[in-house]
Length: 238
Image 1 (cartoon, rainbow, N blue to C red):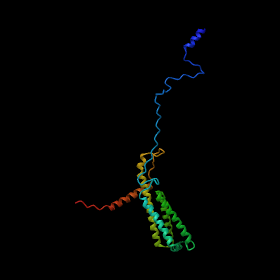
Image 2: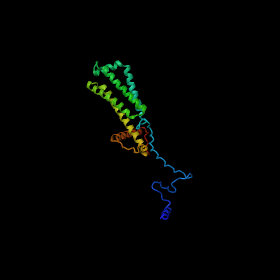
Image 3: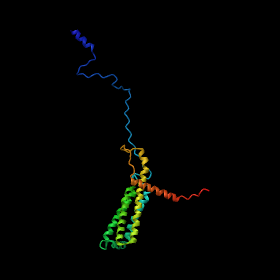
Image 4: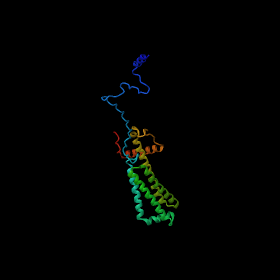
């Protein structure tokens, strides 16, 4: 019995006891001459679209013709404030005709403070190329001339009503032009922006609204009219 037990142990030399670790499989250990596995390359980050012409880091819908709009708003506001400082007495008497002599000075000071804020907003929009900042400046001037037009109508000042009404229409047209330029700059950037997704991975979408389409169509129609006027008339063919 002793010999048979010893023979049984010799027949299974590869077996181990439960308290001993299992032998490693052949080929599991890398030799010194084997090359190390190459780690996978990290994914490339998505590229952002390049800014189109007329745009920069300041505003997404900035058009090159926004510069004249900003210069005009700033120059007009500075000129108005300078004229008021030079002719303060005349301006005070002019305001007294609307609100009375007791409220002339406070009303004049309040109006000039608002005008100063409008000038600063327009100047900031021009320097930072923010077309949207022109909207409150233009709307502020329109509101001011609208109030004066109503006062002229109540007082019966028809000549002043005509003057303030002309300024109101002029600033309304300028507001429409600025809005149309912003829409045109946005449309011009759309092909470049749609070619590459943004950082979040979402494609920039969003179509134009009815108001934006109307402004863009009116601006293009006006430009075509100006180009047709500048072209010399062609001679009729014989």
